[in-house]
Image 1 (cartoon, one colour):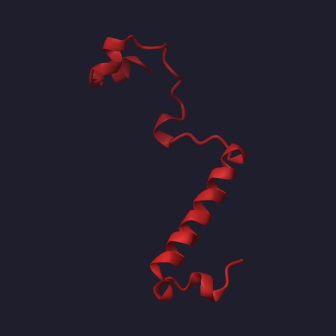
Image 2: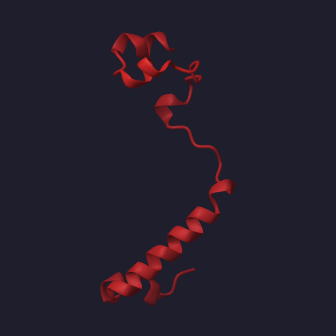
Length: 70
């Protein structure tokens, strides 16, 4: 898929690296909608909680509140 020149990062100028990064980023952004949903393994089985109040959103969660939310 990529040529040897495309993979030779050591010999690229800063401008070439910037252009390659920008192209990769643009392509990645255009395919976001087609990406499958991703859940981090830690949270895969946790259902979303009810909306929090502003006070709860601004406070640090405690270990007990995390356990209770399961």
